[in-house]
Image 1 (cartoon, rainbow, N blue to C red):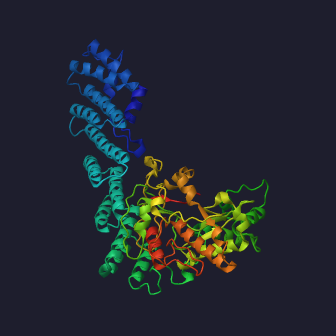
Image 2 (image 1 turned 180 degrees about the horizontal axis):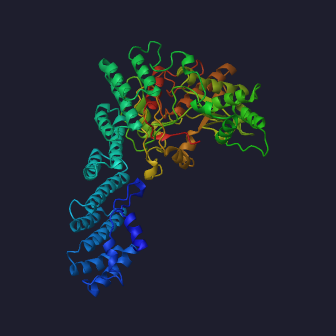
Image 3 (image 1 turned 180 degrees about the vertical axis):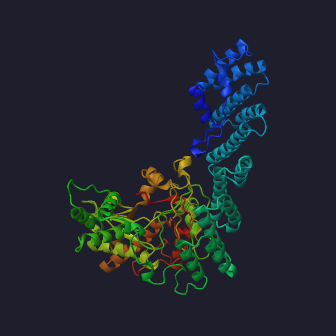
Length: 604
């Protein structure tokens, strides 16, 4: 057998990326090679031998048009010869694979039809051609998926119709079943993030029938059941039970318990239901992975986060001391392991309410505020062009710049103003019962938020009409198919301040965003000192505290102002009373962080 043609036959399916079995590898075309010179049967005429050999050579070079031309001339010379017909069918099928890879699907089907006409019905060759036809339907569906940025319901219906064709032809092919489940999952995701849980549920239930062992589908279905339970108070317990029957993991159990508790409580404390009722419930703790890390691994991770390159031959203790100064402002005493865990906990993680990250959809159309009377989210959307702009993890790393020397700000600045600003930030942590977390660091290169001192103070969000429309023209890099994997687990969690998990592509995208002005601006807070000129020291510090609290609210994602006097985000700035986030401020923030983000601000 010609070695190139053997390789050609084995290659035929073209589905190595799906790890399909080689559907034509079992077709043994031994008769084809009996036409070679020196082995010609007595009944074969010389022109037939020449044409077959010509076709063999072309096929070995994967020059299928030339191979087809030669065999199509040879076939009329021996029209009933089974071997000749089968070999031409192989060439047609291999050519169809090449057309499929070029996304010329109609042409691929035409050549598969030609191949089918040459093969005996019911034979193993016919079954292989049928599998090839199924793969073209599959490839067509996947090509449509990859080319559609925001699929509509009609797009999903068309993709599923193509996959149905593939499954009908090859019902046992696992890849087709998983792909169908993925389509149902993707469409359900789009509905669930709009809180259209009733529409998402049947799609996820169908996804589970196609891929019963898929953990992401199970967890997504459980979360959607919980989402429906949030909106259906009389039947909440029933929805919770259905969720736990599908997925009884600790994460789902935690959300289910919180949901049941929320149905029994009211916001009697003046805070939105869902914040921890006592500081202990939101106590900072180390990330779950800390127990698996060595001291060296923790130190290395923290150096990477803070962009610190340790000196050559520096000991672990010396490296830790540098980190302690950067994160805690002073060195600790005690065992190395205990000190390392303390710094790692402060830098890398905090409240139970936080997850590992968020899934980002820059083009997602957000629904209007669910509680417009008690929040001003719609006012925020006027500034952000309807986009949710927020952080994906806490604590936020804050760096305070020193006032520029010989500047007016430096002559107005006093050391106690920094403490006042930190107190303003701390108010958000207190009012959210520890959900909002921040950490002062000493390295500006690793900071999420940079605070600088200026002469004049301007609330850039006080007048929405004057805010630059940077969000309206925000255009992220286009994701490749490998970067568009949607992880839906917890995406629909109805709990307060529940963050959806990070998509596989998100970390790479954030690095691409690094140089965008929109994110650079979001990492700065300007505190103006000129208003303190006419105030006594106590009033001046109170003004800085209120100014910092308001600006920190903007930095958290409240990119606008409240129109109701008394709210912290109301444009008025006071120096006679300490201002704190009101119920409306907190409700707006809560609704912002309960939604999937269009833009994530963490880039480090």
